[in-house]
Length: 195
Image 1 (cartoon, rainbow, N blue to C red):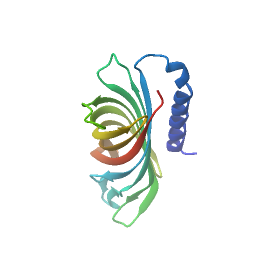
Image 2: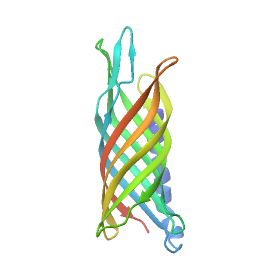
Image 3: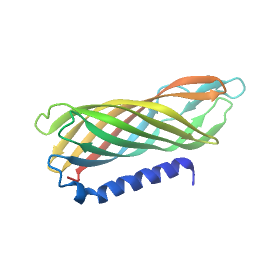
Image 4: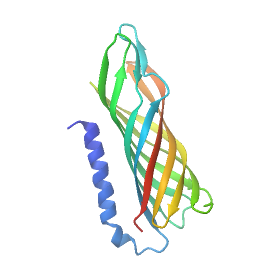
């Protein structure tokens, strides 16, 4: 099993443990815990780098699956979120024309600033940081910032989420040669209130 698949498995295991612990935590007044499974689209805005022989290396857009777990505490003016995004069937193409298939996994911790709820709709902004892991022929893990925004539409304990965010990192294509990466993910999901 690749490291990226191991990260995905571990994240889902931790999320499930959090759900299992809900009855014990649900006694705290005003505290909320929600999970958001999602599907989305990964759109890289720049190439990974340029090699003299193989040419420019680019990532293709691809589908993603994601899971977020968010904790709301009345004493805090923001929510705390753990977020995972996994890019399915990621492809890296070069001019020579070599290409490689692999996966990309982003795991972040975020602070979520919710706006006022306008009837069932509530906008929000998020900012956080974590790790972006590229798993192709070789594996590289990089620090990533995470910023974005979205809206959720709530109907009782269930809501729907539309979100766009940017994972900002540096990729080392060759020793000593790094390039800024902006990878945008647009996703749709549903929010389930556990308590």
